[in-house]
Image 1 (cartoon, helix red, strand yellow):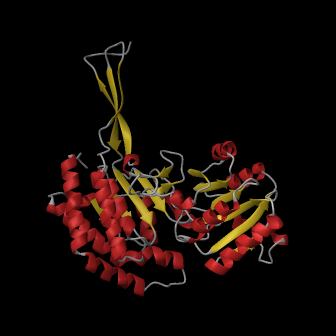
Image 2 (tube, helix red, strand yellow; image 1 turned 45 degrees about the vertical axis):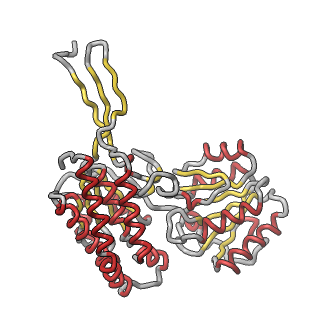
Image 3 (cartoon, one colour; image 1 turned 30 degrees about the vertical axis):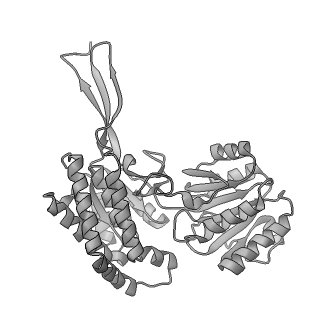
Length: 399
């Protein structure tokens, strides 16, 4: 796709803001069709599927934020002139064509597309069948905005493919796909990594851990744990595992206090391990694989560790590489934890729920990357470009 002027891109986004606002009731009605046919047994997936007036407002706000951000394309990263007279300039450049595969959330149809388009990328959107009606109406809005500004609708395309057709598309794409982003659970990620021909950037899996050190402020620990676990169970930034140092003063009293609050006030199902088994009469972990499981439910593991080093080892062994927290009053211990933990986001005394593009000052996000190439953490507008070297000469040859 050709490079577009920033004004043209922003005009499309302004059109999209107007169109979504005008068609908001229609969007919500189409979403109701998806909700009516959805099995509510999976509450987390259902929550992600809902589009209401507030969600539409959020879509509009996401587009406004991206519109107001600086165009990330064509920015100079470095510039130098060599002794031989060659001028070498490194600039940001679009990826080209991006494909995102995601489950449920119709708002991804807005956020992924607005980011890709502003960064001058073509995007293929492969949403889940459970959000089909919602995604179709949102694609129509995008196409209306593009046509209103005399641009091809090929910039943003919703794929209507079943699993086998998706497999074929990934393994034998009809055109070059420069980046594939699977946004969902382990099964989706494994499927894409095994199938895709292009580069894959993994996103979406949580299984986040929190370690309570012996010097932790208990009120802070409780507040952070409750928020991280219960604020939004469907988020990949929700908390699943809590490791409480056995040397925490009044260990048994505090464990009972936490469990009573989680269970009685927030209806959280508790699984126990380690010395917590001796304190709470609760089910133990059914299998060792539970340590690697992302719950996406009102469910949590409370366990003990004997030391800081054991906590670090356990987190690095089992976490999804998304977010981890230490509760401590010792800033040096917090820094050591942050340096040793292999996650995209590491915290001291704060909830994992802040691992979010909007909360971290990035703005709208395509996904939260748990990969290390080419970017880790929220994939915002600035992360949806690659780079290119421009070399200016006047006849130089290498001798």
